[in-house]
Image (tube, rainbow, N blue to C red; front, side, top):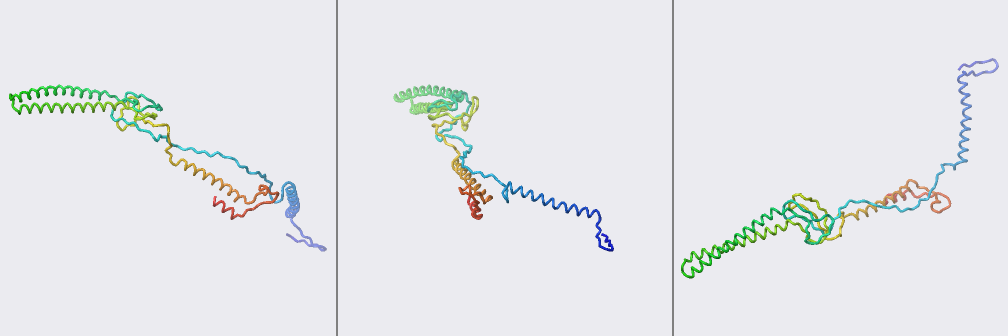
Length: 286
């Protein structure tokens, strides 16, 4: 800046650009002051001082249905697994799943042709042995009479008796074999061991089964139980967890919003502020 002195009065000379800036600043300050006073006045007229108006709504209790889904297997407590006692190919299925059957009713048929042939062969051998027994009996009786008459020696008589005894023993053995084969032939027809309901039948006609193959099940009655042993315990734990989470949510809300309108508690006015330490303890206990 340059100072110019007159003879009478000292004058301060300011550049034009600086004078213009000073003038604008002096004019803008009153304008900003006036705008601020106007906003404050309007806020005081429309809103309460120190905050924003909010809506208050009373919380109502409501019933929330609590449901859960569990996977389980239904199995009868009184049921029997039906397995074949022989090997073979399934030729007939007499029942279907869900049929009510009595004890002894046929369920499935396994091809018995091979076993029937075995039984027939054993029967023929037994019949042939019966003929041998009859021949041995005739020879024994003749030798006995001749021995008593003193015609033949005792050794010949003993031989005839031994042949007869062996033929009789062989006949008994063949009879037992025939009975065994007939009993095994009976196993080719699978029958229900008790009164009940037929379960699932996983095999089909034409399947070859062994003694370890599961053919079906027969349940003694309709009484069934879920194999999920801890079902009710899990449900109770889930309900308890649900209640605890609900209680924790209420206390967490109180912790975040420590002060609330007293009108919610039935009072006329004022605000309630709980002890923060007490609110934090309730959240931990929840």
